[in-house]
Image (cartoon, rainbow, N blue to C red):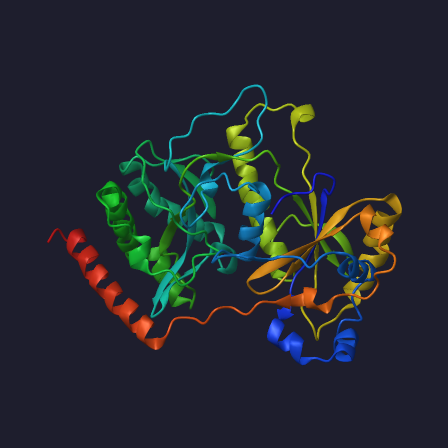
Length: 401
């Protein structure tokens, strides 16, 4: 995905793509009736653009995948499976870039780890009932272990903290939003270079399991804080773009998205998470930066659309408050239409005005390709058995057998 240089505005519409199979079942008249509530600006763009390519998230959270391609459209960040978000460096000025050795920085996220038949389930702190007292108690347990093994906190101890160690730990790990379904034995790398980290992490699990604050949480019916999830390590990479600024668009108006809330759309909350997290790197790697040299960030407007069958009133506000003024000012912008596993991008610019004869929207734009079938019962059983063997090996190493 390349970023159009003249389009610093992005309009995200969650839940708008529908399965292609369901879309094909509808007649032309039924399609026109079903999607008639879309804003006129989007309908025109659908009519006057070539069919957009579907971008699959490839196992990542959709917003994480989009943000990665936005910041690194040339795929210069090298990774096998999971992006090295802890190694990202923002646009710099004359001072240049500090050299970061590969695999020496990781994000550490507080959460609850549960082992299930098809893999682990990691619940991040934003969706746990987590107060400052429990958070402080968590870090009082894990900090001595981290220090013992050479780890240093580069940011304050919070929900997500940046950790560094002069000794590389060559492993790629998933973010809290992309971790679901990973086997624990895949998370714990078995190579010798990671053995010290692996022992530390297993000891941390024991300490947290026995911690009094976790026993008190479970007595209240709350999930324990039983894991510090390491993720985002890898090769250092740089972006020439700033992390975009996010605004939430709802029937109540257009507001800056500055914190995660229960009433906000999931996509808005994910954007808030990433912009806040990566903003910490900006201040860490660029302690002295002049305002005149800072790269101006793009703006992302995220529409609070809950999907077809829900309220479409927000599209009226979107058309009147945003799209019409943009068109009158001659501003180019991009539409990002989100589905369950990926997105499509449409460009709205001055060239569309010359295609005045094309006014019938191509409803196929709203189709999302079907996902490939998941693993069979035999695949799950084989994976489970292999996981048990790996787990026995890990247990033996931990006990010194």
